[in-house]
Length: 358
Image 1 (cartoon, rainbow, N blue to C red):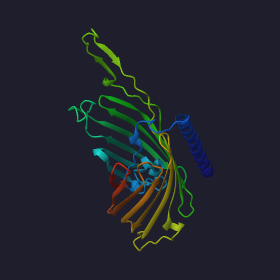
Image 2: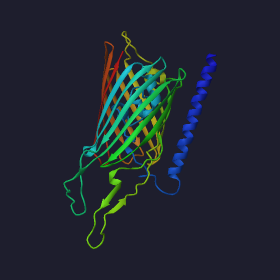
Image 3: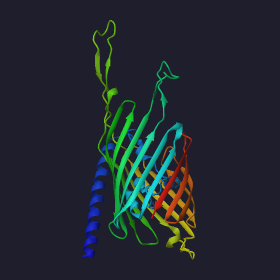
Image 4: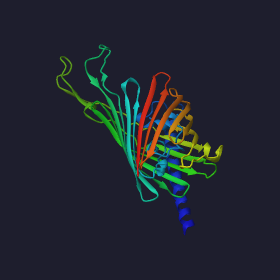
């Protein structure tokens, strides 16, 4: 009976993966059909901004190693490793005064499953309104803001195979116009049992097209002497847009757990050294494919140093970060910081605070 249940779970996971893969392929083909570039064909770009200083400190090579609340973004299956109540907050200090925030909480549901709620927000800050005649500003301001509210369920279908899925409500707001809809993320992770090697697969932002609506879409122009004698109602036509669909495959391992070195544990049960290494390949519906490599070294489960590099991005390349962890009295706290230099947009930094309670 146990073998039968395991077989059924694996079969269900395989069906879900095949289904999601077919949807991804169909959407990517639909977007890339024809001889034109993919760049600029989707909105909701904030959905691609990485969360958490640990993952971004490794240049995003994190889908196979993610085992905290930020797994909601990188690979929902990683949430299955959150064994107790946990909370995470991450703030990205973007260029030109823009900001990106992420907050989430997760709780165990039974022995095998985890449930999490998350909020992601992006704000452009106040931007001066300019025209061709008033290039220094008209005195008016506007802003762009995006939010995503998600619910994630993850768990182990077998001792080695984890699966996770997220449903998100997404809203984009621009002055008096807004667009909204639902998107879905799915992910899997498989622990091979061979020297700590882990395989990961995830799909982000499966969803339908969205379109802007609101007061600014419809307006009335007043009468113009000698031309119009009556007010003229105008309806602006807005184009539907896709959210940025992405497909990620990852491979990672802890090199100090048999892959290269044997683990060293002291008398208190503290792992003396941990050296993680990972690679991620990503393909998107709106930009060229990207490849990331990353590594993390942790000393005595206390201090971590991270580095990574992203290939194929027109802005991001080198990444780095540090982290500190405290564990005691039924409480575990972690503070992480990362930096991501860009080609033209300056230095982007992130600060993350994570907490776990027994």
